[in-house]
Length: 368
Image (cartoon, rainbow, N blue to C red):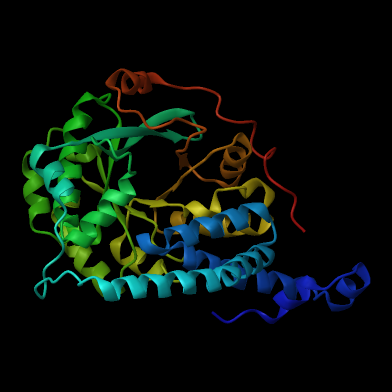
C-alpha cells in the first residue's frame, strides 16, 4: 500500500513546524478522500483471516474522528510494530510443522468438520431477529434474520460460517440458515418485511428457486440481502438468476458491496430495492464531517437508482440523529433494538413507535 506523502508530516513536533508544512484546505480534503477510499476498501474485505486487522482499523478510525489520515497512520504503525513478533511466531509454527506430518487431502477435497456436520444433520441452529426501523415514522418495518448456533462453544456466527467455508459446507449451511429464518418468520407480525442474508454463490445455486416454491411467508415480504464483493460479470449472472424470484415479489438488498468508489457498477446491474450503508461509516458519524459527505453521496446515489438506504450498527443517539439529518430512511442497531430469539419480543414490534432521536440537525457537526 503506497503511503500518502503528507502522512509523514503529521509526526512533526511543534506548532510552528506543523504550520509550515500544513497543506491548503483543498489539498487536505483531497488527501482525506484518498485515505477514506483506502480505509473503505480495506474494511470491505470479507476474509475471516483478516477480521482482526479490520476490527483494529475500525478502532483507530473511531479514535481519530474527522482525521482519517491519522487513523490510517496509527493503524499502519501498529501493524509494523507487531511484525517481528508475528515473524517469530510463524518461524516457530514452521519448525513445529516439520516435526508433524501434514494432513493429506485428495485434490478438491476439504477437511471435515464433525461439529458442522452435526449442526446440519440435527438442525442445531436457530434464528434471532433484529428490528429495522423507519427513521422518519419511528416504527418497525422489518426484521433481519441472524443465525445463532446451538452449541456450548460460544463461537459467533462468523466463526461457524468461516469454518463451513474451509470445510466445503458453506452453501449447505447458508441454505440451513435460510430455511431456519423463513420458518421463524411465521411468528413475526404479518406486516413486517423479512431480510435474509445470502452469498452470491447461493444466489446462483439452482436450489434457491426450489426453496422458494413453498415458503411459509409471502414472497412480497422477503428481502434477500446479497453480501460480498463480486465482479460486474458475476452481478449480471446473479441478476438473471434472481429475476424469477423478484418477479414473484421478492426484493433485493446489496449489503457490504465493497468500496463505494468501485462498487457502483454491480449495483446498477442488479438494480436492488435497498442498499445497506457500509458499517464503517456509521461509528462516530456525528463527529466526522468528511464521512458525512460520503454518506450524503450514498444517499444521493440510492435515490437516483430508486433504492432505499439502510444504516447498520447504529449505537448512539447522536449517530442516529446525524443519519436522519443526512436523509437515511431506514436503520438498525443496538441503540434501536437488539437481536432477539423470543417470539414474545417480536410480537411487540407490531405496533412499536417511539421517539428515536432529537429533531433533525441537532446531531450533525458543522463543516468547514
